[in-house]
Length: 289
Length: 224
Image (cartoon, rainbow over all chains, first blue to last red; front, top):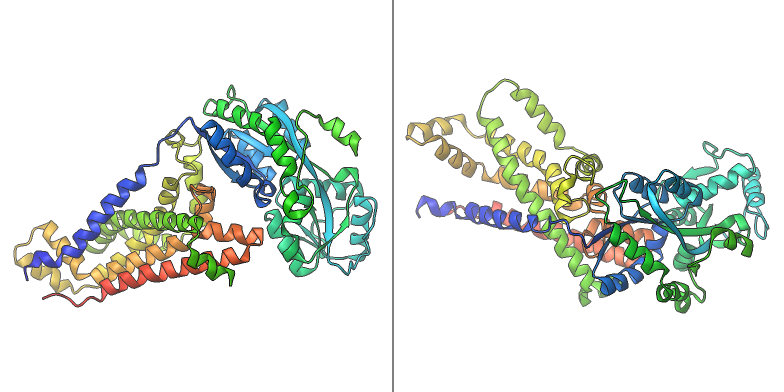
């Protein structure tokens, strides 16, 4: 056989290589239709975004790339102009972004609430506590295992605010463990280790069947979990897709979408995962409780 | 079991994720071969100042942690990063870049070792027969093809199994940048263990299948 035939396989690999390398470069074009949404893990883990986004894309022709991270990271992405629109739940931090001009709009979309969940045998005896702070105090006194997100997410910040109420610094205590992961992951850890955990109700309901954790405390006004949609200011970040961001924010607040949000999960869990609040203010919501 | 049902029924989403995984990791491996092979060749066959230093860099690079690569590629590709104008963040191309960065040192390192191991007399003999420099290199590559395929297998194995870089530069976006590893992490987080198991089985089958193919190619009876 001629020597060149021996090289044939290398040539085939080489040709395939070139074709694939070219194919790989095909999707590099930036498009105006691309909207980057930075959001929290809870909106993804409950399945809400996978339900709403295709409807938005169908209606408007925009294509939404959503990155589900903790609220801390989502806000940081907004502050660097790396996202066009944010759907987040950490009101105090959100206001800072409005004040410094990073965000040019911030509108209330929906709420659900946080709950404290724990193992059914309730080693710290917190079940039925009216106040979240009271329950946290009992957990600390009993030295019962508490699993924290530890990722500067909205949920983590809410948890820290409650520890602050009782003037306790949980970090470093032997009974306090931080996962540094998303809500669903953290619930998995709490379930495995039999620890208490602060979670949003939506993710808990979505995961309830496989967890074996019970609701211990609910209904305290401090446990309100409020989601806002924020559009990033194109005057500050010229690369932001402002039209797309506004279209998505408007979509979330449109009457039809609000109805979809309010009904989401009712058929499966017997109760809504989120309460639609389009047009309301935060103060109105707090007073409702 | 649910996982097998999902596999047999050929869930369209699983299929899409699988194809994207193959495309991204396959392309990244090929790019790393294009870059890594010449580097390996040069390091194995030539002498120049700083060569040892470069080799030490390549050897360190063979163990480059994917999350570190993910972070640095992100820094470059962010909208307001040096390459932000390309608009590549959260695209498959970004993932290919990150994975190629992970695989290139591996391909270069293994290829270099393989070529350096060839009998030095072979090189002399080929030159004595009047081969040009390019012909010489080509023949040496051919002689070292077992090692070069080992390099490809190693590179592909590294990129198809990494999750940190893909998550960071790809963002695990549905229909766009979700690959088997990032989808598995997410499904575990969601508590969909059946889906996660199905994805992990595909990942293992895929890794095994491609490696088997390359191994067969590697140990193919040499035509004479």
